[in-house]
Image (cartoon, rainbow, N blue to C red; front, side, top):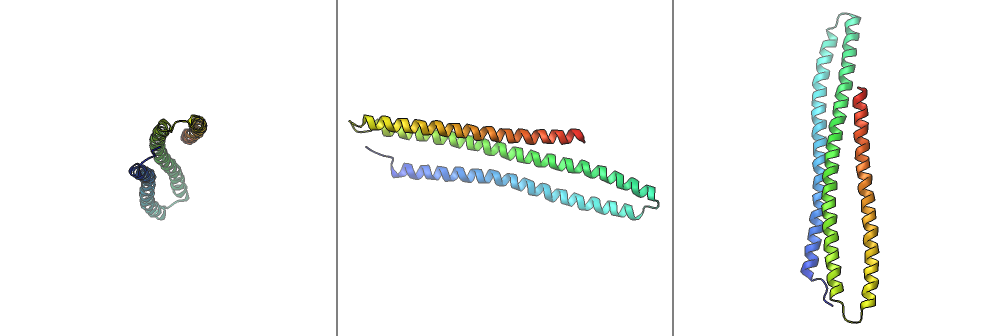
Length: 175
């Protein structure tokens, strides 16, 4: 019974490694966006704080000081909400990209596995029909269990994204 060739095995391992690093790269792109957002937010915050401090020093009455403080509190709340909306967008985008990439890779892996086992079963020696039937049943059950686990994980990921989106909309609506 001929099995997979060494070249096929090496090619499959290379494909899996490339797929894994593709996921890492997608996650890292999201991380880079978060870092860039934080750098920009920090830069803007420093500039705004300097302007507010300069204005606070020149305030001549308590009423003007409290007006400035109230205005800054409202502006800070709006900026904080905008910041978290950006974080949510980045995380949702990265999560969607990772989910889409994972789906493609899992589909390809399942397709290749099925083709491998079908080829293996087709080339089984005569008289091994009972063993082949047992293996098919076992692999079918494993495939079904894997599909169920995959669907549950996909559903949980989608629900998490929906919860984050709903929380963002709730916070935005209260503002």
